[in-house]
Length: 255
Image (cartoon, rainbow, N blue to C red; front, side):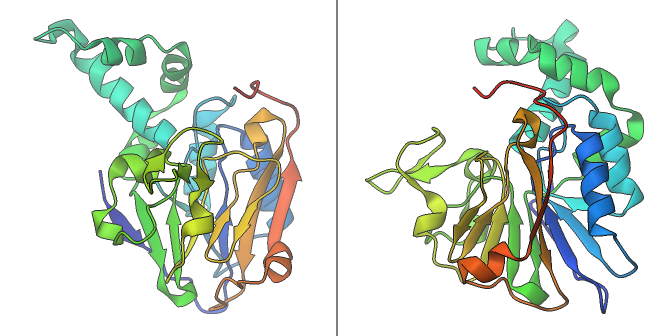
């Protein structure tokens, strides 16, 4: 898996970062229509393009059609792992671990995999763990990073899964445990991320969380930056840069 990628917006264009789509192709289409993409705009996505929602392959097609650049989410990582295990299971020696067997048994991953075409798999395999957009001093990751640790020293697991920081300074994946990592992060780059679905965006001074639970019946949200504009630290100024559409319906219950 690619560790990093960079993306520079064409002159005059906006930089648009979209939250977790989770196979909600109708909502992604509606959001793109609302944004009225024009020549020079660049589209980025925070990962979890697929799994849980109804139309994973169509989401991947839409992203390709508009030249979108996505980072890898934990669901893409699990899906790729599922595919690898499924391909070698008949000749797996030694036997697969209990963890791998549980992953292979996932009906959700199997149904997602069955919907994805060859182009989609190639697209998933190329996803980086992060994208830097230097002109905005912007970093895009899926889940989070440990404050005070250099980007290249961040673990793959934390980039894909972490939600908070415990009282002893350790990353945690548990929902509601510890303090949201964005509250502890102090830059220098502004991080836009997803993964931790909430009813409203997380608006920290140096981090913005835009997973607003579309697949659970919430909204699909984008942060829209004009050319070369840095992400404002002001919550009110940043809120004005958010664009969202309502989910057509809940596709899965919140766990």
